[in-house]
Image (cartoon, rainbow, N blue to C red; front, side, top):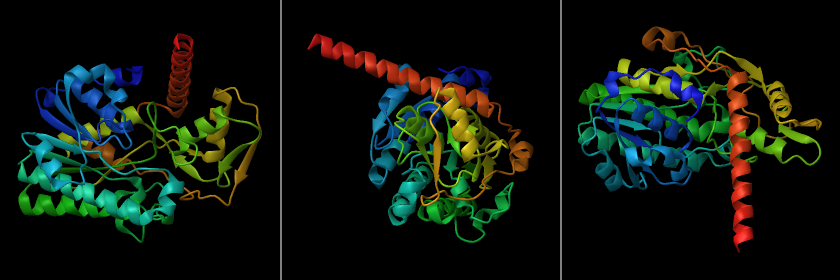
Length: 346
């Protein structure tokens, strides 16, 4: 477990609480499950393993209940929600800007189906609390920066995330309506660009940070960065996102969205150069403006998060990037050693 996970003090709210984490073998989900277990929760994890990996939960596999299941099936949702005090719905079809921009209909349909099914199952099972994990992708291309939560339904979501963004908007509405009609305690978080260990390191379909790490590691000539490099993001470490999710579930389950992120805005060009430096690369960079680059700027207004749940990001971008690069290189080295041993034993 990374040092960032050890910063949070134990919280009695979670002790002995039965918690279902959908998508719990995924990037963010696995970090959340670890934090919940550390706080004494009795955690059930359900994941289809389309995006996640059971390997991500290996160090706590004896402390959780594990279910492999497809949450687009309402019967599976009913089974896994039964008897749970809290349902935290992290299950989603996720990808980077390249995939999202080409597959908007699929992203809309699959994310909507999963979310609708899980919340309805949680309602029928009378779960005490429910967490809707929305996204900064609900915001429009021309949203104000820093972006306040009230801009979440102004105009269409950014075109490169149109289907995904509308699915997340619809699930926020479902949470609000279920809270009003059925009295459910529903929290809603909108995480901004999240990064850290266990992300999907794919140079074509992954998120910005892992995609750049992968590209720079596999460099063979100039490093091609999508966009003109001037677009900005405020990246937030996965441990801070997990902290925000738990705080909203505990302290603010009122179906009112809360941005979770950092105010440390940086251009993609500068980010790429920092990662290249961390990885010892001296290759030149080429910025390809013909590729999708998403919103020109993305940075959250965090005043509601601070006021409602006392949230502030703790992990600086410099510290978080160092940890993420080290994790990636460490995993790569372990894979290489295992491969060499396998060959030697053949």
